[in-house]
Amino acid sequence: MKSFILVVLVIILAGNLLAQEKMQDVVYLKNERIVQGAIVEVIPNTSIEIRKRDGEIYELTPLFVKRTLLLPISFSEQEEKKEEFVPKTYVSGGAIFYKDKSEEVDKRYGWIHGARGSVAKDFSKNLRGEVGLSLLNDEGDIEGANGKSKLDIKTISCLGYYVEPSKNGDTAWYIGAGLVITQLKESGTAFYFGEKHEESISGKSSGFKIVLGVEIGRNDKSIGYTQISGLSVSGDFDLEMTLLEFGFRYDLSKK
Image (cartoon, rainbow, N blue to C red; front, top):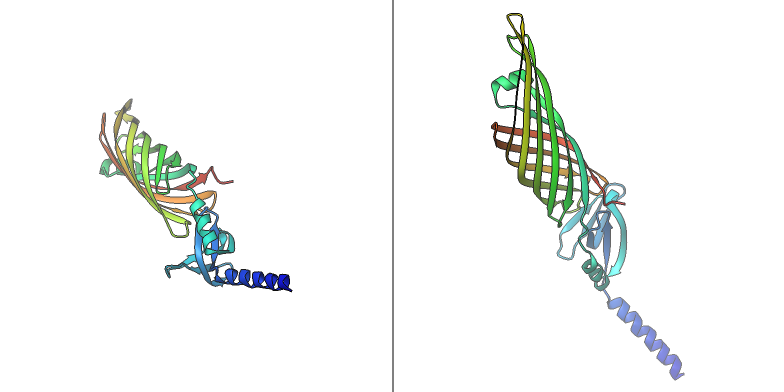
């Protein structure tokens, strides 16, 4: 009889302890972030709203949710403490467009286009380093000389970025700056009084570049981005450029 009473007491005590243990929803995102609180609304295939302990309502997109669990607060806090920053490496490729401020150059080439590729690595949640190569080229007409000209611009850049992800981690804006080395070559063929004339100029210059952009779809392997950048170099030639760039990054660290 005493043994039976003891077992009952143990069961009641265990039940009380479990009842006293506060529970909460823990949402694990595909970008390895964790959101804790109480799920207050679920709209299938549209959104999940979770109220954090400070009262803030956090809206998530189901597409980027890995799993949800109901866990004791103490346990989920331990899980959150175990979360560590995982450095990511990206390769990028995109199209770039440039319109020169010089009326003469603008009239000859219009929008100058090209491509840019880069390799980047995250050093922390908000800091990223990047090395990139840009190639711009176009052909134009030499007015009044029945001739053609060709412009080639190559730029190597070494940049650092500050990245600020959104709350759900799907998008981010970033700003960056760094050093650039630019090589320019322009060649032309013209006809004056029936004679053919060929000329070319080339040189190297260095300077700096600033970038402002936004990333979309950061929870996927392919990340779309749009950015605008300003470049100023001096040396064998002086050049100021405003570049528009559209492209994709590929997250090499995603499995």
